[in-house]
Amino acid sequence: MESSVSLSELFPTTSPATTGARSPNELGQEDFMELMVAQLENQDPTKPMDNFEFLSQIAQFGTVDGIQGLQKGFSDMSSILYASQTLEASGLLGHKVVTGSNLGVLAADETLDATIKLPSSSSGVTVFVQDMSGRLVHSRSLGAAEAGDIDLQWDGSDDEGNLAPPGQYRVSAEAVVGGQAQALSVHTHSLVESVSIDPGGAGVMLNLAGGDQVDLTAVKSIL
Image 1: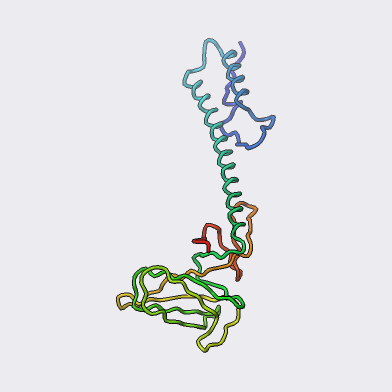
Image 2: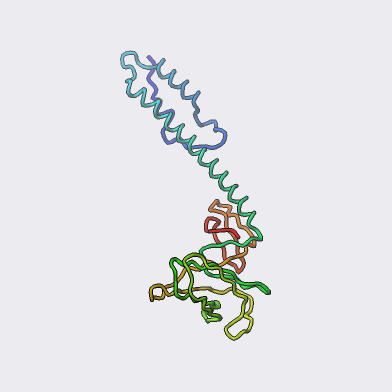
């Protein structure tokens, strides 16, 4: 009588997932069934395979094969989403976007634009513009304001009426609410100059005027 061959030895549970054609050393569904039939034909009649073991081996194959299928499906889905992000990012070239940053660029003969978030009505809103060394270049009182978004434009004039040099500036604001001063969120409008695609698949990055780089998902709105 021929000795019984264990299918678990021929088809291990740790078979690696593949996304392309199988190598000659890998087993597919047809190979598995052939081995299963051979195992049944060559088993010892006095010691037939236990039903539980038989079903366990079938489930083992189904689990491994199913995991490999899921991995390939997730890989394909990731590629599609990545391509979609790349296409979306390329459409932003030359447009201004709003991110969570309060750093903006003052270009020659242009204004530095920003949006101030006012959560509740205020008796007085004040705006501050600083250069990258922290020096206060410009401040402006906007007076009382209702809750909502406040659009801001700065033409580059400092507090003495002189034009500040083009470059990057930090914009901040505060509001008096209920007699107390509180800082406000300020989001500058930044020009998208180029797009970077990470070859490792980490994401699509937008290169903004002034040298800042943000992930595509950080864009709050497109202007």
